[in-house]
Image 1 (cartoon, helix red, strand yellow):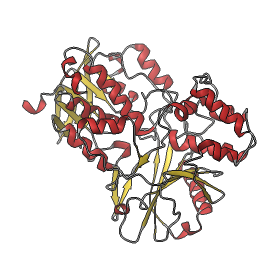
Image 2 (cartoon, rainbow, N blue to C red):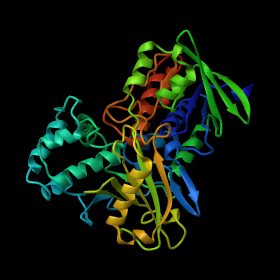
Image 3 (tube, rainbow, N blue to C red):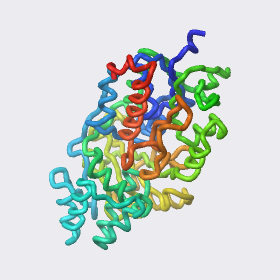
Image 4 (cartoon, rainbow, N blue to C red):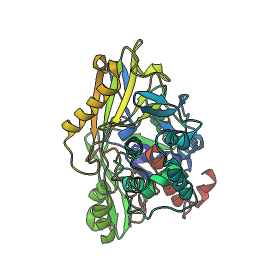
Amino acid sequence: MSDRAFDAVVIGAGAGGLCAAARLSHGGLRTLLVDDHDRLGGRASTEEIDGFKVNIGAIAIELGGVFEETCRLVGAPLDIRAPEPASGFYIDRKFIDVGRGGWSLLLGQLTKQASRILEKFADARSGNLPDGRQSTEDWLTSYTSNVTVHAIFRNLCAAIFACNASELPARAFLTYFTSKGAFKRFGFCPQGTVGVWNALGAAVQHNGEVWLSSRATAIHASNGTVEGISVVRNGESVRIDCPIVISNAGPAATVALAGEAAFPAEYVASVRATLRPAANIVINIASRSPLMTHPGIVTFGKTRRLCNMANLTATCPELAPPGWHLYVAYAVPVPALGPFDAAAETELALEDLREQFDDFAAARILSIRVMRDDWPAQRSCAGYDLPRETGIEGLWCVGDAVKEYGNGGTQACAETAKLVTDAIFARAPYAHARHKM
């Protein structure tokens, strides 16, 4: 049937899946994107609560990197407003803008050991990095015992990587802040983050289709080569035969869909042993009076679990009904890479919010989402990623469990999509489409 004739199928409409599907479609391959939810964006989508556009997970889109390049390439409008100043630190209930002074300005105010720490950042830029076994906390302890500095580094790890400084390899932390985007330029979408995903979904449909509320039930492979997938759509099981399948469902779910026997034993073993899903707690808050006036994202100093908070309506008032301010706060449990008591960890985050903002008691909590297990903040913590190749010809993974070392966020997912689609278009019989990429 004509509606089942596709060159490629992408499972999962999160950041990595959408970017991959849009690139494939733009490159000339008839592409099908399937997702079991009724909206695009996966763990970075948006839902409406009483007139508020509330983001489920990721709220900010990093500018100036692979994601922006992808949107430009496929003709997807990127409706993003950048706050100014974009980011800062909230320490002892005072805002510190480090936009011009950076690490030097911040650390110089807090510790006499600032120069030693900054020297290590300079070493990292030159390629002199820890071996990956030392945690960020242990690395920092060798230079300073300052409690506030340790709290800031913990909350940076939590905000970017959804883990604690004791859980993140120092090599990954330093790689991100010295050679990746480091989230210096970013913005918010006035329709909620789903607005960005809807634009990419429209780009996919230029040469393909998007099936929402459609659950992939199996990946078919034989003799080490992918053959297609099965999908339940409108209550009917549909088989799609195609030579390319890209999974944005994470390596563990991908193995489950195809069955362990279809993969090389080494790959299955690495899926079991390597992946470290990371958790966080997302608290969406509405307030009649402003809790903070800074328009972007602030990272906190000494807190129990709270790591950062974004002021969304200062830049995008459309996200809330008139007269309301909308904020989203992020907290990371201890541990973030293992079992934890969700109720207790959430209460510690709420205690932080009550302590940081006098008017928080009068605010309205729109939603609290604990992102963990099958719906984590990160499918694998930075430093514990798998390859994008699965050992099955034609079957690839994209997303935040197969990212480049030390990267994070939607930018990292977009990068995996570019790397995979570039590899696909470099091979016969698709090399003719490379000029479009």
